Length: 211
Ligand code: NI
Image 1 (cartoon, protein in one colour):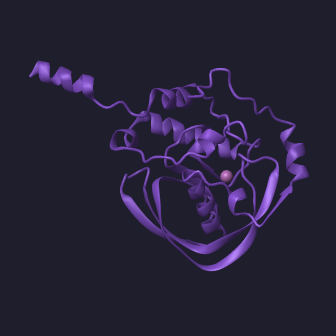
Image 2 (cartoon, rainbow, N blue to C red):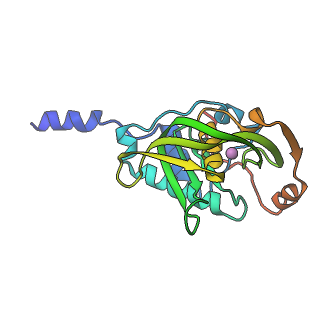
Image 3 (cartoon, helix red, strand yellow):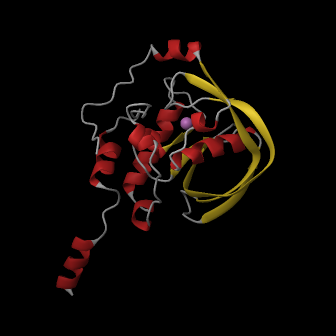
């Protein structure tokens, strides 16, 4: 019994890769946000699902808390953030629920886009990973999405509409390696954002593992 228990302990699957654990553990609460063009390998990769081990791991809690801190930080001030934007190619994002009272941020794990429908709007979008640009992007105004709830770990299906549905589409695209600039009709430089960015330090940490 002891021998088999030891073997089980030794072969237990480690949550996240060594590189992912380095990024999760070594990052400050305010994480480095990947940007074009230097982080295009990460931003352009298709992210993979979290497995059962990762879904129950302490690392996932640490990662999602740091992502939330980062998207809400005055230096970023976003309405959503996806894991590739903090250097992790896993299917995780946060969305500001502008359709709910108090506009809470909510976390979505292993999301799958079931369907998109309704009217196509051409609204302005920006992305923390594509400073300091904005663009007009055609998007559907209704989505249905299925995801793993971070609290219960159950699969939940939800229909979302309006501007919040657009944030979901933008963040979902990140998990596929797609950026809004791929879909935009028009792109323009946002001078106010460029000026704001000069007030903060966005340098990549010295310990950052490129591979
Ligand atoms: Ni973005």
